[in-house]
Amino acid sequence: MNKTELVNAIAAGAGISKVDAKKALEAAVEAVTKTLKKGDKVALIGFGTLSVVKRDARTGVNPATGKKIQIAARKTVKFKAGAELAAAVK
Image 1 (spheres, rainbow, N blue to C red):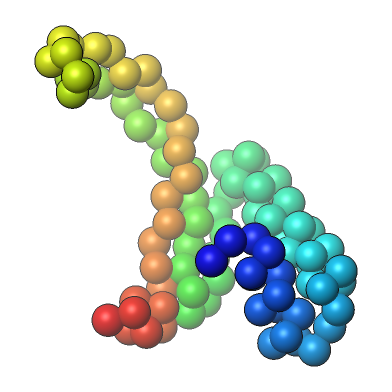
Image 2 (image 1 turned 135 degrees about the vertical axis):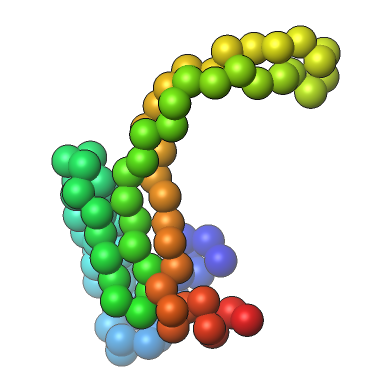
């Protein structure tokens, strides 16, 4: 599902226009992004939790050449599915 399909599904499910559904989706994504940038987590009961985790620097291997490379430390977003979501996709 892409963004357009998600907007259409939200509009149909909530009984609102596609324009309003797009605004709501963009506002939700912006709110989640701002929260994660601050280092806080976003917990949606039944769906899952988004959090920021720090990945340490490490040595990797370039699969094309087999040469070792250094991968820098960075922050990334981690998603842990909630119990209801995990059960729904079994």
